[in-house]
Image (tube, rainbow, N blue to C red; front, side):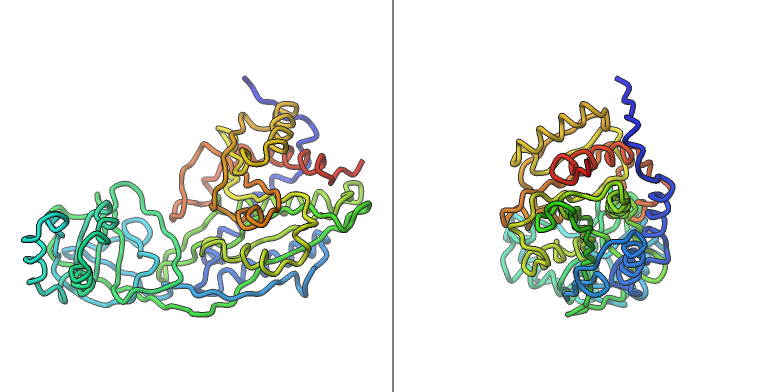
Length: 417
């Protein structure tokens, strides 16, 4: 079936949306993380956009500040194996809780017999690992917790740890730091008989990094004390060393761009909403939904007055349609969404999921606020890596998702008619 968008769907500016994604995912934002003030630069950009659109601030400069502990990699990130230089972000990444290190050591390949033979465990305990680099396969990492405590402690005495990953490097963040430097390396980039490693990894744990949510309001003309919320996280993973950053075009410059397009639409006088619309750009989602949890604990509008929240994350693809987390929980609203999609021919398909703690909707719905998390499917699969770039993001379903979200919000109370 050919999907043809209704004329009403063409209500956002696709060139502007692409410019937003390019700006947020560009090198000047340093991956919107916690090195070189990347997330603060992104927040400053969004404050300007909120003001330009005409959103009212619920706090000074739209800012709800909070702090979090975060491990960062601000300096050097270099790895050589048998003299061969590997590329940060492409061939290797740091484990999120890695400690710092500057070392040269011989490889020690973990013998999998240690997981079920006492003799192998005793042999390992007799080996001095302090000047060796422990190398293991990714499936073995989860099994380390099965080992006796003394053996686990002995493995932590290794000069460093390398985990060989079979297919894809997927970076993340951590709130703590190990004493041992730890990296992941793509298995196909690892020499078959690797002998010697040189690693330089600068890691800094920031125990109380100050960041923020950004919150703007369009007051309702009929029921200003009832709220519809549109949210998207603007943060990402930041940098790995001085030369490598994670762009985060799909995750989540795309959702942030959609939030801004919806805000610009409803800020037009002819689209003034009946219910108040709140637009929240969350910080620290990648660090564990920290910003949205903080907002729920310190709400700037009464949670009981929120009629519905729509959270936007990963909206840069769409060849296969979209998935709606909580669609199986809030079945009436999901049926409305599917009816609107069928009527408007916006996206090829919608799929419902149940409860999941995978984005910023979670703490709201756990507190009784009805909420959806919508993300698009199909197309490029880059995720939490250096390949999630604005130049390769197709935005196949972006225009259709806008029309669907607009119609859905209108039916819930944003309708200006």
